[in-house]
Amino acid sequence: MENKNNFKVDENLKHIAFIMDGNGRWAKARGMERPEGHKEGVKVFERVANTCFEFGLEAVTFYAFSTENWKRPPEEIQTIMSLLAMYLDKCGDSLIKNEVRFRVIGDKAGLDKDLRKKIKKLENESKQFKRTLNVAINYGGRDEIVYACQRLVSEGKEINKENFSLALYTEDCVDPDMIIRTAGERRLSNFLLWQSSYSELYFTDVLWPDFTDEDLKLAINDFYSRRRRYGGL
Image (tube, rainbow, N blue to C red; front, side, top):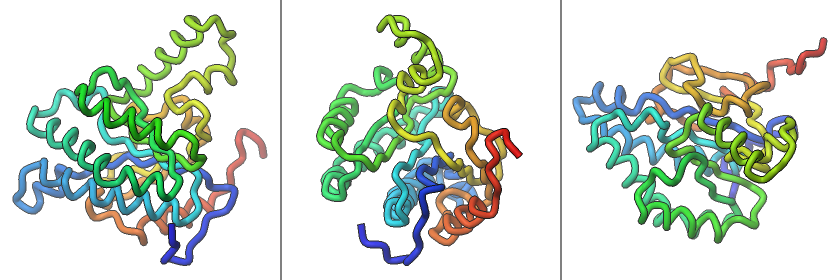
């Protein structure tokens, strides 16, 4: 991917995860229905993902749909799932061309059969690449921890930190160095609970559909202003 921003990260920042919040509020503020906010939000998701890889990141993760989001109105849920399917159709070839691994993290069994088929196809076609785009769909951090425990037991493996990390949905992906949440909320909301143990947290009041490359640079510069001690001095 061509870097049009002349902005690069170093080896201290390999993985950013995003909690994309504020699509509904963005739409409401403009007199639109909530699904319209998600349509605008997916455009930002696509742009931000591309920009992150242009900057030199190894992995990017987006929280798109939680296990709790099934409580939302059916038409909103349908919009989100349709937008994911459209993204797979539109951007699958581009991800492969740019050597980006695509992976959905979460309980895929709860998704529509046709959507699961699209996901599996792109995951298989891109699995050899090192750079990784994770999209969390039907995802819950607590459910992921339970899943990892059950997986280790079923495989007869010792339950230790190394094996546990490899049994998670994210498997061999490096833990996020930073988690960015938009729209002013200041919590993880059941997102990457194991992986985020030493992640730097960055919160912005900017609604996700308004999140720009400049906002991303501000977050990255804030990351570099911090001293990561990992329990040391």
